[in-house]
Amino acid sequence: MRYCASPWSFTRRAAREVPVGDPSRGGVVIGGTHPVVKQSMLTCDTMDTAACVQQTLELVAVGCQIVRITAPTVKDAANLEHIVRELRSRGCRVPIVADIHFKPEAAMEAVKWVEKVRVNPGNYADKKKFAVIEYTDADYAAELERIEQAFTPLVLEAKRLGRALRIGTNHGSLSDRIMNRYGDTPLGMVESALEFARICRRHDFHHFVFSMKSSNPKVMIECYRLLAARLEQEGADWNYPLHLGVTEAGEGEDGRIKSAIGIGSLLCDGLGDTIRVSLTEDSPREIAVCNDLLAQIPALSTAGAGVAMPAASELPYDPFHYARRETGEADLGDVKAGGEQTVRVVVPQSVFDQVAPRISPKADVKPEGIYEDLNVLELDPALPIALEQIPCDTQLVTVADGVSLPPLRAFRLLALQLERLGRRNPILLKDCLAIPAPPLTPEVALLRAAATLGALLADGIGDAILVRGEPGAGQSLRLAFNILQAAGCRSFKTDYVACPSCGRTLFNLQTVTARIKARTDHLKGVKIAIMGCIVNGPGEMADADFGYVGGAPNKINLYVGRKPVKFNIPEDEAVDRLVDLIREHGKWVEPEPEAAPNPGA
Image 1 (spheres, rainbow, N blue to C red):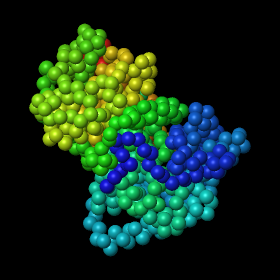
Image 2: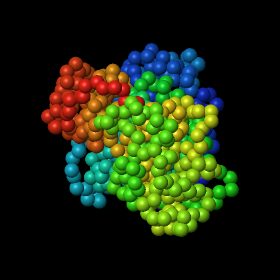
Image 3: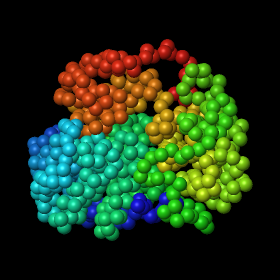
Image 4: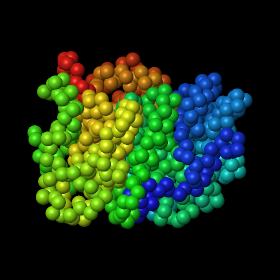
């Protein structure tokens, strides 16, 4: 199967055009040759018309092209009429999307008023109880018939009114039926979406887009690749647009890194027609990140002229199943890289000189190698590499500076050439092959490094990383470690999965996230999910150790993994009870006394 035109040179996937609203009157077109569309979501109560209008206007003012609003009940869906009417009376023509979970009747109301409706196949017609059921083929066919009966009315109404749909699967909310047959897998997500797409096609309805979201960038990348490959297999007219996003990415630097890894990797390979960066912050900040990320893609993905590239089918990695490339171990001095070792962090001498005096002996964030001191073989993968150039499988190799390829293409090509030679050398990844001049801003340096290094790490390529695009010494060291954590390559601090908030949220996510972090951010290797409601909560917490989930207004449910263990805790007690739960399960350690600042913290 092929997931993109070529992993070696940028060619945008040819997607059919899906209009959202009337393009001549403020609507947009997703797909075709149109620019990637930026979108975001409101965080206020859908019944608060004034707040919804104000937040929408604020998003439009910073360049948001599609605005999504949750519609958890028929009553909320009906109020979309008033929100849209007020926006249009103010001259705002931005397309509005209704976000639907659990309630087909809410979708049928919402489609009357908005330009697009998002449905989640995992909960549109199914109830999720984490039940284990053996389905015969006849049972499964009967379930599909039931789903078709539930979904067809919306398809027909969307077709009649000229609306668009998004078939949006989430890693955290696959139905029990899909889970029992396919497991909690990318294949399950793709099959769930295709079931709904086939219903659309049986009614000759084609104004829909797909999304495959996960809070884990590696899983998200695999899902979209598999979907793109499956759509190509289905036929040329299955070229529906793709909506990209890493759900529950969190806030601050971590949220931006996760989003850049997932969204940036796919954009560099030509996938993606509309994007949403999900941050636990005020929504307008998401659009700024969208703008910055989209602006980097040409430089990160376009190969240099005159470089011969391999066939699209020749890959040094399996794009649909993550596996770290097998290598020998190279000596970095005090530690080794490659083999079964964790991915290491290397810094230039200039960075080491600045940060070393301020690093405590117990620090988790510290340089593990100095680039200038390493025995590293620099190669130009744009030229043929001969076996005699590489002494053994324990020789650390990297791409030489100045190669006329973006790092993503260069390191993939290096890995391929090594594979052709039968070599298993560990690879040192670089975020750039020349020091940027003038220096990059911190925002751009973060996105470039995360998109490049994260994409390669998701391919299974890389045994050590070197960040040079960020000019700040301490910040570049911290960025390297944060990229490794976001890519799932190592854990040096508490990991948080936090949703971006919407009208369903039952508490102030930004305030609560800050409160939980203040109590728990010293818990190295512990993963905590902070979810505003139950839509994706239990499922997205599948690989989290603990979960803090809104169960009702001012009431919190606490989870261990995906299992709820404490219910209806008053919000003002919930953080303390979460700490107690972590302590009960042997994951709690007392924070150490304040020490001198760590430049990588």
